[in-house]
Image (cartoon, rainbow, N blue to C red; front, top):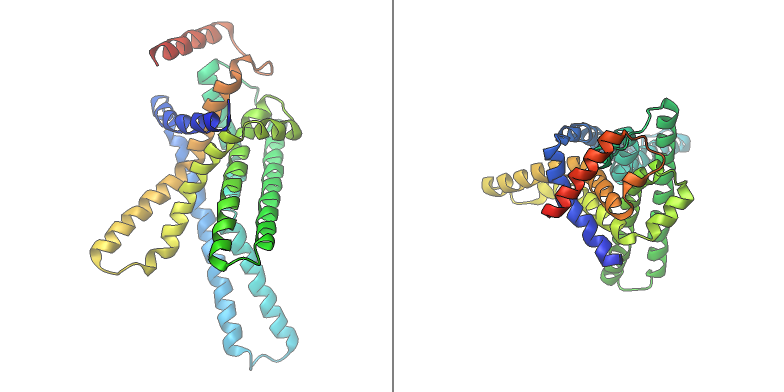
Length: 303
């Protein structure tokens, strides 16, 4: 498949995934990212308020501070909370994937079992390994994404400000889509017993799928962030506030269910690509496997 065929496959399975989750009553998994998303973003805004408060205090009290050390210490405090704010707001998309890794892995296994009859032994050691692997992937992706952002800012520093901002966004946003999609595809690659380097190679050969999965996941989050940060700037009349309040709730719900939809699309798409029923590392019961094979053939004939 070429890039655009893979892109279409990912988007198709986002739509198909909604019906799949409803049909097999897996929609309740969305409760976990919903709660986590509230907590993570609340922490980010809390740290941001502390950072701003310290900054205002320094501006007001700079003449009354007794020494340079005290000024330095207050500045350090402000920067610490600034870093925490950045981590819990700018990196929310990665944090969600890392913290939810056991849940997303379990859901992906459930989907695979429904599709193929595959089963995997539960192991606490394997669970810890999955969490460490998810963290490594996230740190790697963050490092590369922000290296590219800094590089683009440096290369475009001599350009007109408006064009520079457009160019940086046009290049870095799709790159972010790719890395987010990579994280979700890696859950399936891990069960196929691909190491990180092999997973990197596989995803690089299927960039269109990674971009498709990561783009919807990212857009759902970014839509909420945009509305949340700008709702106070909109007109204050009742109808306008009611409209944007409704949009805020909708985008919040979309952001909360985004990880569940993304892992569903990733699993369905990977099955279409590599036929997960052939995974030699899975455990399967013969009767169950045959039943799933017949069911899948029936579904394909109907489609």
